[in-house]
Length: 64
Image 1: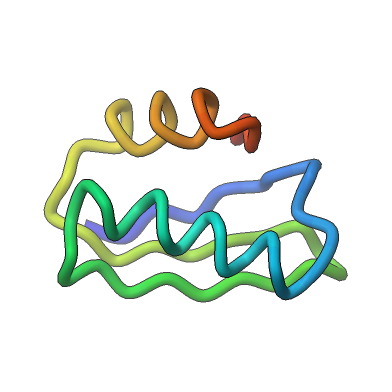
Image 2: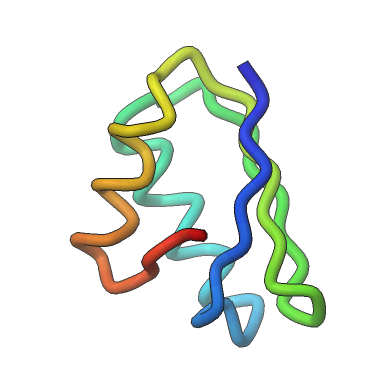
């Protein structure tokens, strides 16, 4: 499954690294790429989108 999310608080490369760590905490094989300029993140994962969004919300990176 591929998720494309907008994360308003995605401000820098460290934010992308944090989002990657959160996602890979649920799915170690997940592929995550993000662009702080556009606030967009693409996630390739086998985990349900609701779980990903909930984990990001808990980490302070609410996704739209």
